Amino acid sequence: MSKTFTFAGTSVLNGNTKVRFGNSKQRTLTLEKHEHDNVLLIELPEAMSKADAVKFLFAHELFQDELAQGAIATYVVNNAKELATELGFVEAKQPKAEAAAEEVEEPAAEAEDDAEAAQREKRNARRRELRAMKKQQEQQIEQFEG
Image 1 (cartoon, rainbow, N blue to C red):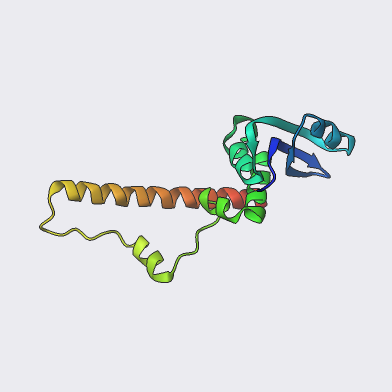
Image 2 (spheres, rainbow, N blue to C red):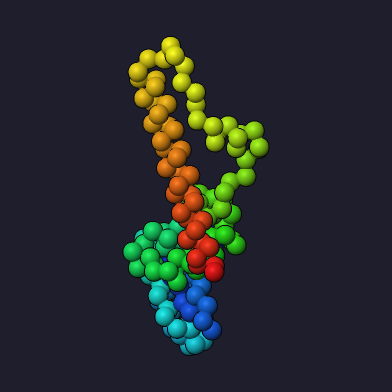
């Protein structure tokens, strides 16, 4: 069983913003005692693993600023590879044939009925939307890391 935490957030030490975890409000005092700045730990809705806590922080309104999102992205890329793929921070590695097939939109068959054509177009539109979102997330990561 993996360790769980009831508090998570960010702090700044020596100019570096990082994700922090704890199991009580005391963690805030400990970080401040060790000269961390901008300590922001929140109580999680339930005990969570680090990966789940980071996923929660990623979507939380208090952690939408550039420094917090950058710290979250860095943590995820370095420590939670599956979550990094899920959140779009890194691309999932696919076999070359599968990746090539994903890039090619499905051809229209002349005998298809309207419902099938509409479904195909909907899938293709969703693929384009997901590719655009992934590209945007990659650009955001580059900005955070740059």
